Image (cartoon, rainbow, N blue to C red):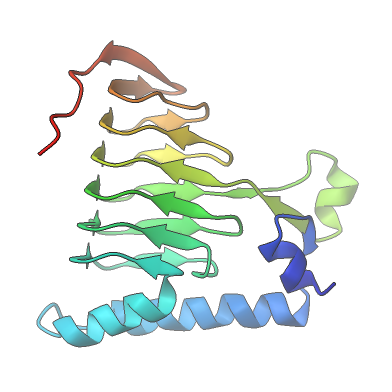
Length: 189
């Protein structure tokens, strides 16, 4: 099994292996291309996003500057909005439902490095998926850590660091983020 296959399978993999480096360089190049576009180049921007993301729903709006590790593990539903300067470290799947709004300078970090210094220094890492439901709003500067699931109809307050799962219909804030209030259930159309 190659190191890239290990990465895609959720196993520990060697970061510096040629196929992993090539996948990362591809994503970085696509980000650079996207970040060099004008807002008026809608068709070109969407083409690049669809090449970068593993899957992407209808009506995406992604502001510059976006940074993505690999892209093939990044998935978003319809009406996905990302404001300026966001980072997606997708060495494991990062999946967003529909109607997700992400404020500026948010980070979604599915990467996890070994706690043991010798293992960490050997150049291996492993990802843990991040899953986000529908109708979620992330305030400015939110950071979401590996292995977290965030339900639907959730608001994460600005500056929060999400290290544990957040249930549906919740307002969560703080570092670490904690639920401070239940929200009324979503109204289905």
